[in-house]
Image (cartoon, rainbow, N blue to C red; front, side, top):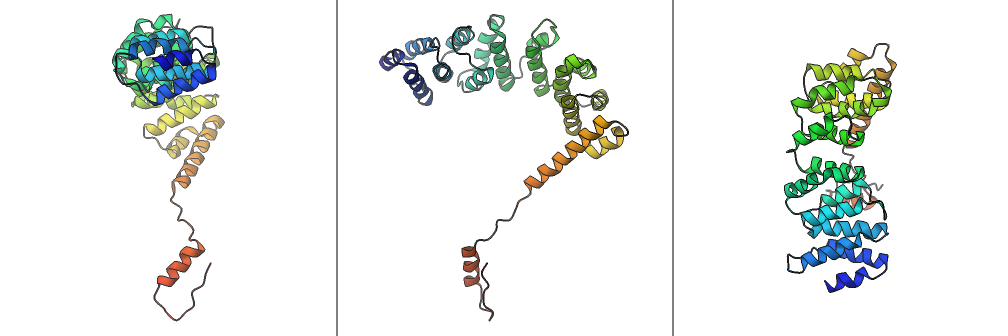
Length: 290
């Protein structure tokens, strides 16, 4: 506690290093931990990106759900250096406590957070639990919600398939409005977890989209559903340049991936070759070095 107050008064770089130390050497559960959390929480008020990042990472290691909720509130304020949502999610993933309890704290104040904090929370939930279908479906169906949050909900149902939302994902994929292409592209990827004739038909139709990302995700999902690229080429190619180019690209990428996986026998060095020759039985012929 003493060091925590000392470094709070130091310049931002030293405060940042101290928070890094706290994150690396997790505090034991002791009487002083609550007080340390509160002081480290105030480190988030410093207008220094690295200090804010390290302070938040430290709190994720030993902080309570209530303190982490306060931390996200502070991070979400417009004042101070802003933390990217991916940094926030990655830090939350280090939390060692009850993830369900932490998530419930976040849900309780979800609408009070700015959009980038909400997005980070939804990503954290997707990585940690499949127990929030109802709330995610509400976000997915809410057309007034920020599109980034709805994208997060689509990804959630890609990881945790739910028949209740399949038709919504299919409608997104079938929508040819170029303004809505992100919905179609992300849904095409998520539909890999929804086998069935309706899904295959929708993804095959998406292969004719002029948008590269929609075609790429659709082809990847079709492969995941058991269709070969050669089979798709026979079904789709014809005179459709978009489908033909994407399938050719995917097949070539697959070929290169397979080549990279091949085990290449290491080249024997001169010394290794000489050692092998020395151990070999004398057959009357001189050993030839490399």
